[in-house]
Image (cartoon, rainbow, N blue to C red):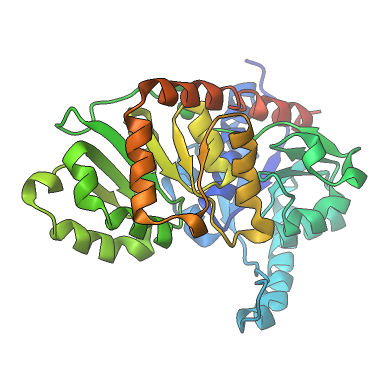
Length: 364
């Protein structure tokens, strides 16, 4: 393998969905011949501690930034000062590292570093995960050489067409390679409830309300999020000991998550783009329940794209109660033909070449 002498800096944070695609690009950079010591990841303090951020021996840095909420909060007052602070942190970092190119994910954390990179005339590339371009990428688009997008180009602003590249969303290699493992002692079908890295309170409560019913017939894996763990754990304590063994509760999962996805028969998930495309890579039957107040309702549009391809079951949270959700879960798990159809169709949407496309541009 020929070693390539080029420094690449990647920036993104705020949620796991804004960091894990960068990890997929890092994997591809290393396999292409970029040494790990020439790759730099800039993220937030919490993401920097995660196993996936530490797994490739690249240099990890943190900066400060601020997020403007769409409704008034006191934090909006100090956000401009955080962005300014992050800008000067970024200037110092970029002058020290001297990267040849920057790849920024569409998250508020990226803004100060992209502003600093533009000031230093470093080529900047953006990536957009969602089917509607986020506010940060909208603001940063004027600095970008190219903007990689995860959905067909006609989903996005027509005045940006010259900059847009349909790459798909970079997915870590193990999501394409992971094989099912032995999960639990029962022979029952396996359900995974997955609310994303932050958890999903409403989704958790819909499942908890019928927990005993599910455990009579299925084995349940539940990633509830750190903020929701206490009441989910209390619900677990209230069920009988035999059923407890079929209820696997986690606040958060790192590298183990793909093993559980691989062994599950049905996934109940929010509709973040990263989650949907990771599930597509693993050919999983999915019930997608979009977060109803996501910015510009982008989770609904993400899921609608998959639904239009008969690749997910799309349910709206506002029209959902615990009985309807239970009935749909039972219907899908009782119909192997329907489930197999969902699995085939979602896999057709898996972005198998996204990382390669992006890396080819970064190394030009």
